[in-house]
Figure (cartoon, rainbow, N blue to C red):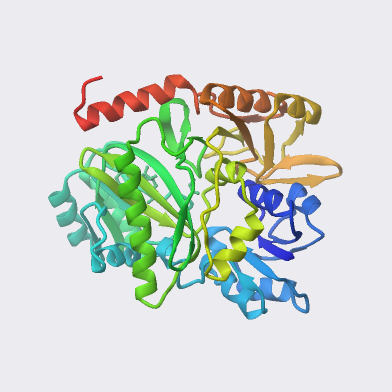
Length: 434
Ligand code: AMP
Ligand code: GLY
């Protein structure tokens, strides 16, 4: 099988590594990811947020199966171009990926099909309406409708305290985009629940908790995600009923999109929050999460090539996942996310990594004259996997200590200290005694 992947981050490195176990891999990348390049029989450098450019890069070549991975690549219609080039495709069309790139579409899909889980919300186009909605809802999340890499949301109490500050942000989004989404602020613990879908059926993956805030104890600015952990079929703070509710919402979306004649084939990612009033949906992504892909793909016990094939052919079965625990920590450049150090040399002690048992995934780095350099975005994902969280966390930490240079990570991710605080917090939100 000749399989083509489009993308070049740590998430795509994890996907590529798994695919390359049983297919002949090819890649289109915006910048050369040295690890993906090594796994690929051939690769092309192209603007991967431009469907035509990707089409040109692979013109005259034949592939059996294609998978477009990052959000902006899907929003640019790259899956549609791959299909036009004659291959089977396991990632969603531009129209199906709208579930991610248009939050107004997403909220109205849920409403029209009576799928529960949305917070109170309204899309407004004037500052007057924005002020009215904020007055009605009280504590709010103010967000653009489109893609922002997880960094476009501002929340009462976290990012602004006065209504006027919130209004300033709402106005800036209205001026730029013509509209803004205002949602009631939800309080609870977030988790990621991803599934494969062939347009009708879903097969869920183990849930994961990502950490969006830059600094320890979930403080500081939002980032693309600083690290994540998984602990089998449930997270330490979720109950079976939470997972059932979340699964129903994912299945509901797949049914709704099929009914609307816009079937979703690929990986559907639900960003959920467990609250005092059940599970709520924050957003959907039309792709694997980054870093969450590193957690779940390492646990997949079946061939990812076969899973992708079954998605594209409408024949999805239930792939199996190990019950092991995983912890991923992102190493990021000094100054990240506000003033990240670019073009700084970092080095990896490969034999140290090997003996630590960790795995390192290359994210936003490049190679020049035999050196690995940072670009300013997240540099490496470091994965630890073990039978329990403590060991998985220790392995990830050991892996991080084998990377030197001006990069840092959050040592608290996956530790029992941080996790038990989350469990306690969730108990108190649910009104349970500890
Ligand atoms: P999004 O880009 O919609 O995923 O939002 C990024 C982050 O902002 C989420 O992961 C949440 O931490 C936070 N967030 C978004 N919407 C809400 C909401 N309605 N209530 C509380 N937090 C939110
Ligand atoms: N981990 C968040 C995302 O992939 O959007």
